[in-house]
Image (cartoon, rainbow, N blue to C red; front, side):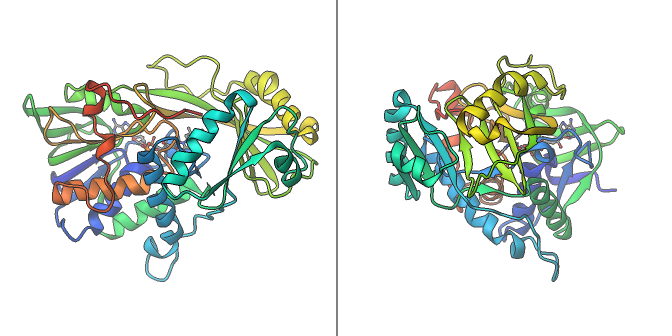
Amino acid sequence: METGYDVVIIGGGVVGSSIAYFLSANAGFDGRIAVIERDPYYTASSSSLSTSAIRQQFGTPPNIAMSQFSIDFLREVPTRLAIGNELADIGLHEPGYLVLATPERAEAQRAKNRVQRGMGVEVELMEQAELARRFPWLNAEDLALASHGLGSEGWFDGPGLLQAFRRKARSQGVDYRAATVTGMAMASAGRISEIVLDNGERLSAGTVVNAAGPWSAGIARMAGADLPVVPSKRCVFVFESPAKVENCPFIFDTSGFWLRPEGKLFLCGIPPLHENAPDDFGLDVDYGLFDEIIWPALAHRVPGFEELRMLRAWAGLYEMNTFDHSGIIGRHPQISNLVLATGFSGHGMMHAAATGSGVSDLIAYGEYRSIDLSPFRYERIGENRPIEEHVY
Ligand SMILES: Cc1cc2nc3c(=O)[nH]c(=O)nc-3n(C[C@H](O)[C@H](O)[C@H](O)COP(=O)(O)OP(=O)(O)OC[C@H]3O[C@@H](n4cnc5c(N)ncnc54)[C@H](O)[C@@H]3O)c2cc1C
């Protein structure tokens, strides 16, 4: 088995696998690539526990640009990630997001709308009466405004996207190694020379990519670097209801819950009341969140949901960037051969394609070509220049 690689990617989730796919397809790169993934079944990986939605309705241009790049790619996934004649199917639906605002939040929503429209996002603002007319199953009484995306937003099969990236990357010569990275050997304080695996192997690496999701701060520490990325648990609840909720988009409610249909069922969730400890990677579901908070809020917003039956639930981890809730992407300023691709804070599935394409250019050409990801650079943390995004 090979022990020397030009690029070693730590973490084979959707982000690591997207980078592996784009880099192995990049005309400017012909080196050897390994992806080290300790869990080939992805049982605890964020990418397999994700609800996999994509929105354009961000508050900052860099994140909007990521979504614009990614939706274009997602539409082309069936052919771009096909293997021979076998198309890749990720079931992309684009019914839009509906972001609801109380009178107090209406002005902030209008300000976001100006940023979005300035970036060419097709999004309409609806006053209360129009909202009630368009979505008659929704209680709009306490709402002033809603922002509705006109396509380019929706959801898809995220684990399917991960597998499609992985399959295609392997078909392009990428080695996937089932092992845990346990340490790194440094050539000097500023350069990683070897990746140490739990099976005793040591891999030499020209460039090391940290795409370890919620575990990426631990990987950075192996190279002596700090990353403000912690695991943040998110619970997802699946329910059924006899209510007639037609043309249901992805909804962000004023109470904090999100909701979307999944076939005849619905998925929902809400940010936790209390963050888990930064060293807590547990995946226990907090059922109290549904019974005490989400259900009453659902029934208030969609009165038909007074009658519902919760069927199942699961929990996964956001790789939360505690500095500004946006990705941290690019070369580490002090460790010359370490590239970061983490900290997406709930956006990593939708932004995986843009990240993969940009990072592959950075490695192949030393600069961004297909999309400029420089706003996401690590240095912004030291400079205290946040990309302020609201986290849901
Ligand atoms: C409930 C939930 C809902 C979400 N909803 C959305 C959404 O609607 N839209 C969206 O865009 N995003 C969403 N996200 C976020 C999104 O899923 C993540 O941002 C994305 O999956 C991160 O991908 P990743 O590849 O960085 O991380 P992961 O998928 O976690 O991959 C990291 C991999 O690194 C591996 N690894 C870690 N340590 C080591 C080691 N030492 N050695 C070897 N391998 C290691 C892990 O096994 C793991 O497979 C959601 C997340 C959750 C949990």
